[in-house]
Length: 151
Image (cartoon, rainbow, N blue to C red; front, side):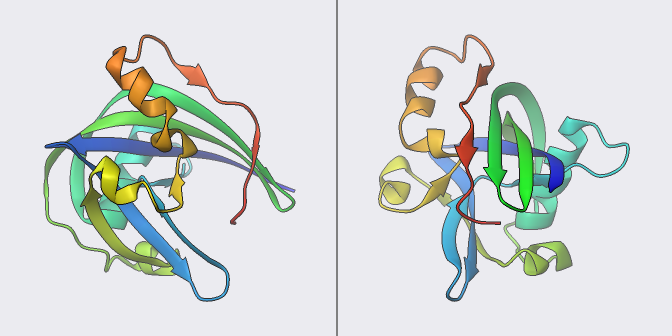
């Protein structure tokens, strides 16, 4: 079984959140906040910023760690560190070779209402995130182990 460390960023700007759409015909179609695997000697924050750049073309300032997500799939055990982030530049672009390799077909800023009827990750974005956000993210939350539907 593969073990992987991953980092992602939840970016909010003007009441919208940054998501990328991963689509693979007959396999999956979901939206997720940008993120991915940590490489070699990267810090979690460096990996998170790189993944946003690769998947969306945008530059972000990575902020506080807010969630630790523990995921399992028959082929992989993954721990993902979710940070808050702030947009600092760039333009939406999903043409990077890594985005194409990962089946990222679109990046967009979505309101809560726009992603309410979609399959989104991290799953906390549908409910818990809003309570934690209203409370100012008082502490890092370790999310319960969850089975990954897609790998």
